[in-house]
Amino acid sequence: MQHDSTGSIPDIRHTILMNAPIQKVWDTVATAEGIAAWLMPNTFQPVLGYEFTLTSPYGISPCKVTELDAPKRLAFSWGKDWHVTFDLESLEGSTRFTLTHSGWSLDTVTEVGAPHTVIRDRMNDGWGSVILPRLQQLVEA
Image 1 (cartoon, helix red, strand yellow):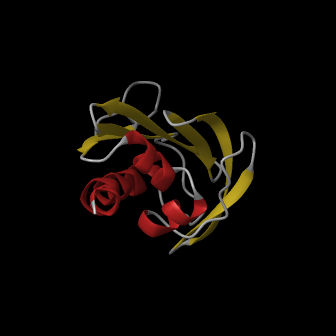
Image 2 (cartoon, one colour; image 1 turned 90 degrees about the vertical axis):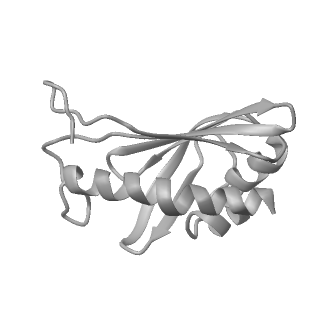
Image 3 (cartoon, one colour; image 1 turned 120 degrees about the vertical axis):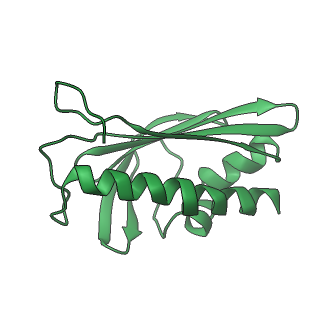
């Protein structure tokens, strides 16, 4: 894994092009029902400053909506360290979706006691090989 001299680890960033209109993608990434269908169970509401939870196999994480600009951008804090951003761009009936998962640090461990260096690689792989393909399949169905 690459890292810089400040001890931070690069953000996870994935961009996919989905054959679906931006509003359909937005409704899938910015509603509780939508997020539950491709990511994990949650208590999300699309309200700036709203505090919600994500329930992963490792437990329940507190989250908070930090940016909301429908249907283009949603950002939220996840647990004590992470920040997740969904950026959507409409392209003639298709949507470019970019996920950014930031907040990684070399000397930090997650709430479940695993080092960020290990979890970042696991999460990067999960986003790329499981989660985002599931989202794409859902919105293109």
